[in-house]
Image 1 (cartoon, rainbow, N blue to C red):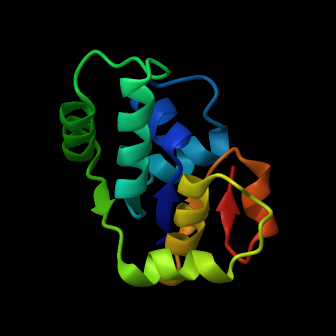
Image 2: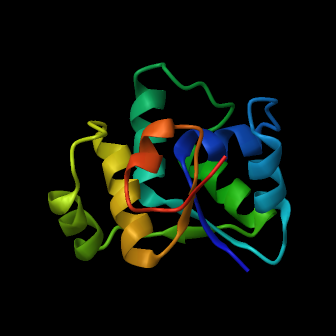
Length: 129
């Protein structure tokens, strides 16, 4: 069993059955023996992008995420102080604050990140793509 943290784009590609999702990522997410988590940081990122018109959904982010969580048996990963504090010690390979928080969460919770972002592999975290 693997414990997976989905990057924001991974979650969206999974939800939309997008061809951009790699076969390895698709197999890991669809394996019912694995636990899949979506960070509140990703929900926050989607809400910001939606408000700016950079992400178009057919429903509110809240409703979309809620439906996807139920449909896919995903779990929400709340942001804890230790997750945010972990960011302090991370090297600046990645500048995006949402991605840095995901890395902090993955390290703190011993989760494998599912992401197409190659910068994540520069950190001490397992990555699947």
